[in-house]
Length: 401
Image (cartoon, rainbow, N blue to C red; front, side, top):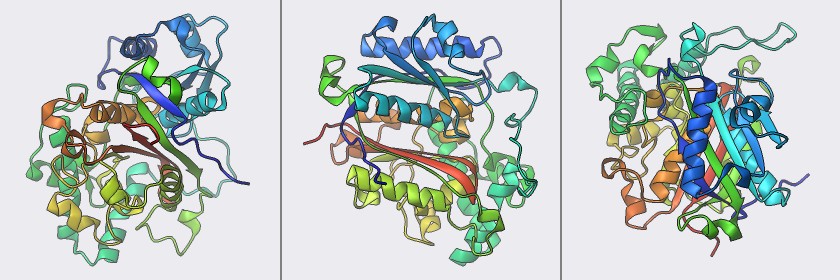
């Protein structure tokens, strides 16, 4: 069975994104209203202009009625989707496919999660029934296994590896300090990150992303209609989603130096987008930095670094704001926290700002400003190494030539 892409068939013409953080005085419904209102205003549309909706949320509501009742979308098609931490991206993917198919003219993908008042410091979910053989391990411990495995593969001692992952956290907090929508808007010193209280293995508290509340939304139309709504639409070049077999933790050949699902997902995304050298063609990337070693491994799985060389690129500043390929210029999960249903669309919002050259000067990606590069990438993964789903989008500032 072939998979047919939708390169340059749809475009984003409006987006909204709430500040992420501790919204004690707002409900999930309030956040949805805020993101929806900003997205509609940016496209110059009214609620009645949207033909169908895809709502991404893991645990803040069930069915499309969370959105339907909130926005008073009586008798409109509203679909709720969930796919681990790629939930917001899944809402976007489905909305894009609906427009590309011709089933609807204008669709909205919107994601939301309200986690801070859940009473827990981490994600709250009830695991589905299984046969009892699933590996029992905490999420920080699962992703923490990437660190010593990567160090062994790359020939690094523990102290050097710790410096590498510390620099990743430092970079993302440096970027987030320049973003008014981020939850944590403070630069952190290397020393503070390096010496933060241990959570698991080599990971300290500041190697881990936080929990937050937030919402983000995107409006999608056919590419040929895009300039009716805005003079700066963003065109979808590729959408890739894969679900792995989940056999990593039981497979003796799985060595925790790569996430297979991401590699497969990237191959499909680059083929659809026509990207041959992501390191040289992608202008910026928003990636799933749930833990610092995750971002390190992703640099190789996404083709941004050669195998075993990402640590050098990190230390050389290749992924800094002024580096060859800025990664997480908005501050990433480290600065925003991770409201599951909203994170994928929040990543896309940074592409929206950057590719339209609307990011504030202190966060602008220079290769976009100069016109040298015109592609952005977003990446989510949900689950854990060896047992996850992966999503990648490639979006661009120009339509098909």
